[in-house]
Amino acid sequence: MTRPLGAPETRRLLDGLRAGAAGQRLSALLRPRGGALSAAEAPETILLGMPQLALGGLSENWLLKDCGHRHWLLLARAAGRPVPDFRDGDDRPVYAAFNAVSVEGDLGRARENDVLTVRAELVRVSRTQFMSRQSFCRDSETIATVTMVSVFVHRTEDGRNRSIARLELPGFSEPVADATGLVRRAAAIRSGGFGTHMGFAAVEAGEIARLGVDPCPSLDFNGADFLYFASFQAFADRAEWQQFREPTRRLATRRRDLVFRGNIEPGETLQVVIAAARETAAGIAHWCRVYRAGETVPIAEIFTEKVG
Image (cartoon, rainbow, N blue to C red; front, side, top):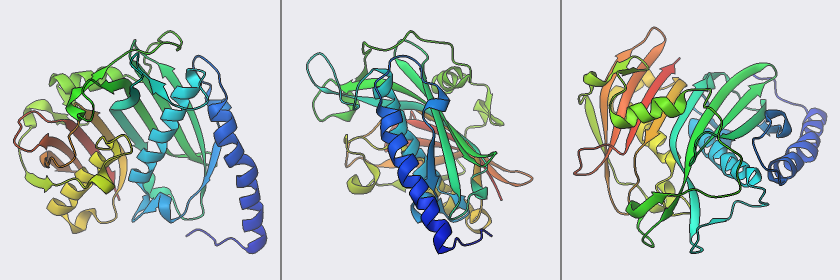
């Protein structure tokens, strides 16, 4: 149990956060500078409270949203822009769409009033893909590491999410090799030729359970009118809770890989299928597939391992 802070300690902590995190978040992350980023150049501190926590530890949904926003700011900085306002040749908005996200760590160890230090870096790994790696540490202990791969996209038809297409933007450094292997693994999962991943074989895909989801525009979509990538994690956890209930109450994520193929329009519904699952020595693991209602090709594959 974390010892409550007294008034003097709280004042010192908040003063440090105001002077450090607030200034570093904007000046370090948004300082124009081309090329790849050094992790040491963008340190940040976060005091954990209710918005950052969930039953059982660090809120994974908050973590994904926080990392997604930071990834977007890092893209702007890598392009030498003060803000992430990207446009195509016709002055239409350009967005960063995540095609793969990997979460690793021990989210169950985070507690209220913990102070986490965040370090982040971003590199270009192909003509159209960018990867960020963000670590959240308490003292010398890593609580979570989030790796994200994005592509730039724009709508070829105004207001239609199914019309998104990739594009390449100028102003970035040359690509470097993906040292994590996430790009390769995600491509194999999207193609269906991954063999095994996180202990699940592609040939195991079946249907243990199915959850119908009607995404809410004000909760599950983002400001760009896309179904938010973090909502997919929430849908997988709802399917897990519906199927397994009490044994999963206080489990926390040790690893989760999300691989995306598409998006939906507001008003469309989804089916979340638990394709495979197994008990582990410390918790549970499962593979969820997210489908547009009435379709047979999933728009997301979600592999999860949780421990208690």
